Length: 424
Image (cartoon, rainbow, N blue to C red; front, side, top):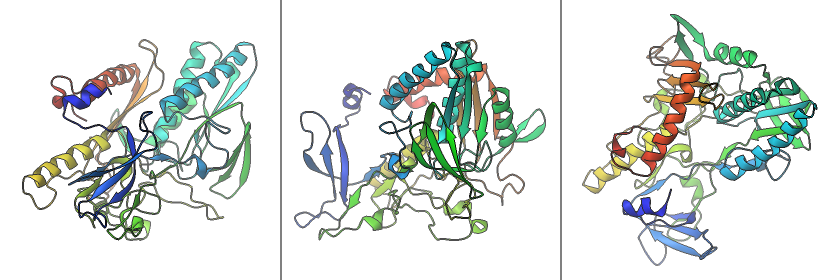
């Protein structure tokens, strides 16, 4: 996004990262502020204290490659989590492609690099775009394409799976996904926690407690997410980070964080306003807020290793949260004594289009809708979700829609005419 866009909306943009929050001010001021550190070339390393009346934490995640020894683009695997990562990964894939063109067999391992990863959808998109690329290059027969995931079943996606209505029948996302993997000749390893990644070999533990190795020529493994590492201090300079942030670095909001058995989890546990319970002028949206519990059922191996996806909070849900929090703040500035807009994931639907081959004539994408994101078995006793609003289709039309939405999203992000009419 260009600086012109920020100027158009009267936004004072600072190329910097937040490093600490002082919600009570300091010994010299009662005004709350955020300490930032500049990352631009002219001021790099310099800090500044930026005062605020309201604060929205929308940092997104830290890519926690260090959670798995050997994981990451500067070690023994690749990533697609940033533009630079994706570019480096594409170049590495080209090396494997050239070898296959010369007749060599290659094993490509793609998926999650830790037992608590989220965003399986990003790896799903990548593996099927790779598969499509290999078919287009007429070397698909030279590739052993393997999916590795912490999902209990394929199609879990960190939302506990879903049930969709197709042709008058109810189909689980497990069957929906497995049939697609089989159709494209992709094998899979599920219920896996990657313990360590060495050069051309991954060591992983299964939910049954077995430790196994898998040898590869190319690996794209997503990292787990954590909070970005923001600290917080009170007016006396004492560390109060644990008051604002959960141990994983995500910010506490108006959720029910009571530890309780899976069977006692409720949709009402999830936040409504994304307001910090201690400091009412602080909010957190998207990946930045701490979820009260997973959506998928938590599971551990006999050795006590957690192996299950953590809940996704990106894309459309993040956009809705951001919009409603912003509107609440407007109302509070105008006199409201509390947030006025809600955006609970237990009362929110979402749409996702996962690319499975980028080509206007031969491509495809999986188009999915889900309602609600967090299942409500009290309201929907059988499947936890409304099957009339939870759908899934794979086809070329999905790719066209994905392609169109890419440009529509960029149009909206730039604040071009009528951008407000475009939904999240």
